[in-house]
Image 1 (tube, one colour):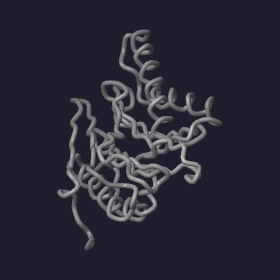
Image 2 (cartoon, helix red, strand yellow):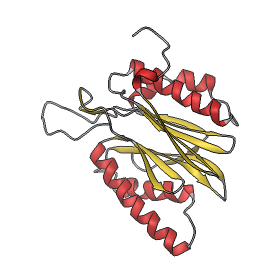
Image 3 (cartoon, rainbow, N blue to C red):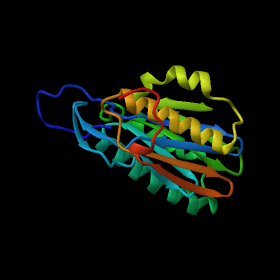
Amino acid sequence: MEKHCTNSQVKGVSTGTTILAATFNGGVVICSDSRASMGGEYVSSKTINKVIQVHDRIFCCMAGSLADAQVVIKAAKYNLSFHSVQMENPPLVIAAASVLKELCYHNKDELQAGFITAGWDKKKGPQVYVVSLGGMLVPQLVTIGGSGSTYIYGYVDAKYKPNMSRDECLQFATNALALAMGRDNVSGGVAHLVVVTETGVEHVVVPGNKLPKFHDE
């Protein structure tokens, strides 16, 4: 996650973060690290919460420019609240992902941010969607993003299983974040995890010193 910087020596936009979402039997886990950087080099904050609630049982993770991501999510929350009032029902997860997709697509020349949307609804149960840079929308069972994701593709491919239990999926997500944060210099801080099921939402925060260790640091 990058904050905009006016320093002319900082080139490009870094997606300095690790974000992940995975479905399990009856729910979904969505999670991220908490580090924000400028230009992918200077750590400007260790306590950014990148898992944002956009409706009762719908959450998003953001990667890319922090300013861009925040303004898109703010607009999406407003649209979803209005949609919920009109429909007299909570919005579907696909509706939230579609709102983000439209905002990203119509502003693709100005925005440098991507999103993972995950949640639970009565129509389709647990769902995960990727809204990439430029506004592409893709449904997934499990997905990862950000600079830290490059270190854990093998782990995710090897360890993720559809229809895992809640505890198995939570441990899988925690392990994946720990591996990425241990290798990626612009991912770190604490692990923010949210579990969404039919019965409600559970927030889990794992401090950095409590994360699993897989190698000597």
